[in-house]
Image (cartoon, rainbow, N blue to C red; front, side, top):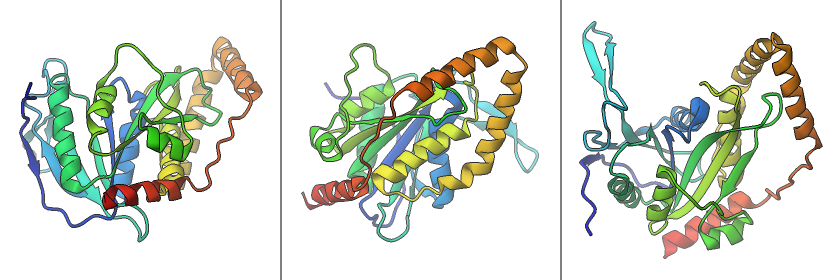
Length: 286
């Protein structure tokens, strides 16, 4: 059965050096908008340029995901539709270049959307796709936010010594995309835990955790240390909010105690970026 096509525009882009396609979508898998903020940060840090634009008309139920009316700089009213636009960015010499998508999870036509992203990945020559996500969990805001990295690609799992997904049951867009895109590129998933009692956005500490994991695993310079002041301000605001309620304060102390008592999971990180580099070279040689 043929998957229906979606209208999209591809822009001319220069040759990219072993590009990695990083994507995140606002929705259930983006608590605190930590994942989409991470992609936006990379685009800003590395001066992203347009690579592709996907027409939202056939992807959204606009009763569910409504466009927004804003007043533009010229004073005229403008309608902003939910967007899934792709940018490309060059990184410092020696690091993989980037293809970035910070978008909105479509309501409709997930398979068609996946085929479109597959076409774009082929167009830009991506050898690896990394999906970013953030989920609510029982983690205290005062401790490091754990990031789980996994892959359904057996070769990549063996090379990086990381786990394979074991979940069975209803899936979302990310699961569907992994199934479709694995035939085009290697697949990695990075998911950060966000305190369930602070679900609102922004969540800079979670964003920085994802960026640090990307830098560590893929060798991509992310400049995540530049978020330090923003993280301190966020932690201070959360501390002030929770300190006013003794019951909440006691609950968070229990979470902290649990986090401190759990044995630290030590992962060998040295050489991960080199393995990714080798993996990308092998794919491009093929």
